[in-house]
Amino acid sequence: MEDVKNFRSGFITVVGRPNVGKSTLINAVTGMKIAAVSDKPNTTRNRILGIRTLPGAQLVFIDTPGIHKARGKLGKAMVHTAMSAVEEADVILMMIEVKDPFGKGDRFIIENLPKPAILVINKIDTVKKGEILRIIDESRKFEGKFLEVIPLSARNADGISELLDTVAGYLPEGPKYFPEDTITDQPERFLAAEFIREKIFQLTREEIPYKSAVVIEEFRDVPEKGLVRISAVIYVERLNHKGIIIGKKGEMLKTIGSLAREDIEKVLGAKVFLELWVKVSEKWTERENLIKDYGYGV
Image 1: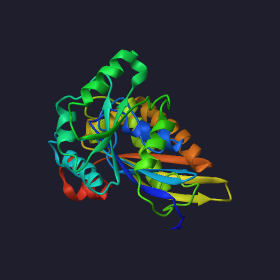
Image 2: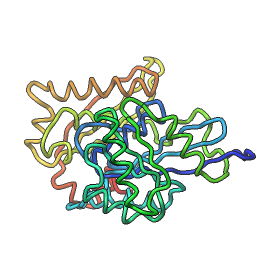
Image 3: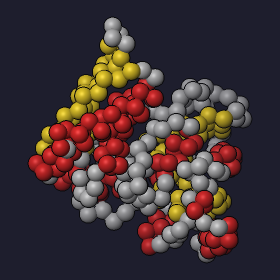
């Protein structure tokens, strides 16, 4: 860590309901894709650090799973992960969606915030300006809950500079926790697993994305061939899920692997040989030992 006089630094936890755009925001503030994104809720299962260093501040953003009424053990582990990250934050970003603001789920989170947060209104590119002003006005009803209100479009990176400047002003003086060019603390093998899982979310439907886990079994450089060799196992709960992910003549698995490999190569800056396997792990989402073994809720 580096001590710099008048330098600000701290941890910013991004919370909100599922699918309001938290992971898209993390990708926007870092300038690189480090968090899985899909149009399905609860894509994020882990807390992911996205780091942005400015001339006078270092902002460490924590992406969290969407806070929801969890039923199964995996869902409860995800919510626990999110709430734990809130407790240790220097600044909290409470994110809502412009077309569905202050619903029951939003109010539950707001009521349980341990301290005032910055309210982030996302997806402003989808409505007229008058609607945004109405939401800002409505936010005043939550007296003492919000320090600032920032409208933005995470998808278009519109409003990100204003967000960074505002957040930096609320951080305490502190050291630079990470080297200036660091954008995440997650190991490369974690990012590889996330990108594979993202493609499953994007390409499959119903319960399959939620019953799938990805575990990297091999991740090694092969310098003589100028590539990185990655072998991963996709765990599913049922035999018919395995058949769907593999697809007719292996086409679905091939597509998942091809799209994931493109994202992994961008992060690694190297050619990747990606090998995928699919195995059945019955009721893994209800077995605490397997949830932890597969890297969730820890």
